[in-house]
Length: 375
Image 1 (cartoon, rainbow, N blue to C red):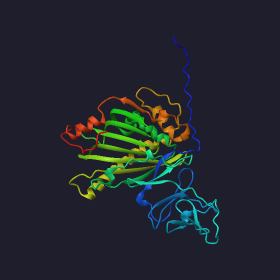
Image 2: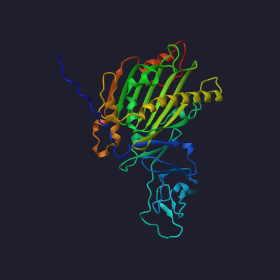
Image 3: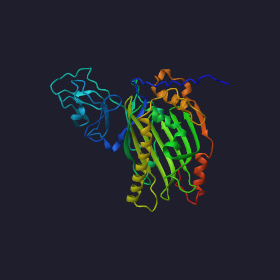
Image 4: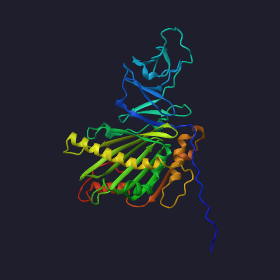
């Protein structure tokens, strides 16, 4: 008989330093940025975004004027420059002072941090790097051809606030076991793939709203870098086949708070009017936001556990956390092992590719789901 008293597990709470992940982050929908200056409180500071009047180029820079600290967003755009409201210094989108109305000489220190930007897939992204390096070319976000097709709707983007560190969201890529208790979803297969700056989650399952009869739900969620995640999902809703792209891109306010830019783009249903297609997207977006609220209630009331007690079936938490750590590590210190391809299967079952092929052939309830490329 073993009378040894069980020893409680001591939770190690993760304390994050004031450092933010290296990579592309969605700032806003691209068409949201105009010649009217806007500010965004991210990365523990405030940044400014505006379009040049002449070149229509988006410029993003730190918002505070290094002269006397005014918020440049309270100024105005003149040509391609931003004019400070305090002393009328003009700053170019490259962060350099271009004109001081009362001085012939511009101080060599008159430089503001300019953020690298990328307009793609209807989104404006900024590149963050703690070391100040330029964007890594091979980590540029992939083009979503469907966004440029008339057969798809535009993004409908909403923003959600989460009061914890970004890693809690990234953990979801491995967290197979939370789908049932939190989202009322049964999982038939669940696997992950890691390669370089990408991390992919493949899932086949069922959902109270997104599946009907024996038509399954398929989901391919892909992180490209630390903060830009898109999901291609197929299923049924109100007896209609659904193929959607979801955007779940987070951006840190600080180390204890972040925003999710959540977007929905849907393949238009043939024979359905533009108004009806928009109504379907609206309904799907609202349903998805309600699903997020289930996560938020938990995230906002939990601690960041660095040494979780895991069991079989929990999913590869340490795999995704190790992958995510590369974006907080100096480039020179990154081992070559981060480029290696790694795979993990938590629940073996029908693959997304196999399931989509059956859907396309009309194998489920004699209903064909709109075609997407099997991955």
